[in-house]
Image (cartoon, rainbow, N blue to C red):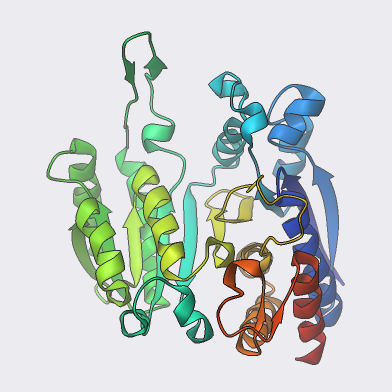
Length: 356
């Protein structure tokens, strides 16, 4: 029987709740498809600060580097906002991404037909929405040096190299080949030299993908087009900051940020997590939506472990329970058969795995 090592980081806020439900589903699907998951639970973010005084303890990083994948919930909260930047929870996640060389963030955004009314957009605008945002994750403004906050001014530096752009572009083009064969590079080339380089490199990479089309769109126009005609997009390729913003916008097109998973890959070990934050305002109430985390676990099975059949089962189970009308609070106003708690939703999806 195949055995995989998974570093599990629950994090803060609703992180423990949603990770518990993902584990519930993983237990069921691993039993069904004949493999074992060796889970090692580690701390990161605010929970780690409270215990170790740092957001990413050495033990957590070591575990991640020695695992086949990292399954992560969410971090952060007002409790730690007053700390110096390098000690805040988010700094732990940024460092983890950097240390694992997880430079490619894949964020699929699909509109479930049963949840079309959960979106603020008109149903006819949502027909056929199925996009993938490919976001560069370890460069740009979030990591560029120099950076500083002074008494009367502050500054950040956006830096990208040709090699950083080329490697993420190839991931986007490879993904497009498995989809509708269309890549849209989102940038701000009319004012940013870094964006000019992105266009140069993307065009060079395009020569190796004659079957994939490439178009360019300024980020302000892309933000508008996402709400005007989201179905026009197949694969969106973009840098770190723009991808962070646009993928959250895409989540609201789908109806709830609690539905969107992500995979951060590139190095030996990938990080699989929902795109939403720790939502401390609802932590402990049992109302969080675990679907994004469960789908992230499915992406982990597919991309990190090669267990495609098990990943397909998770995707199918989620689609079935949505089609049957099971809803968490965030999407409960839309054709709900039953309003579920976080734990109930995880159990229903796990049970659906057995029924497949």
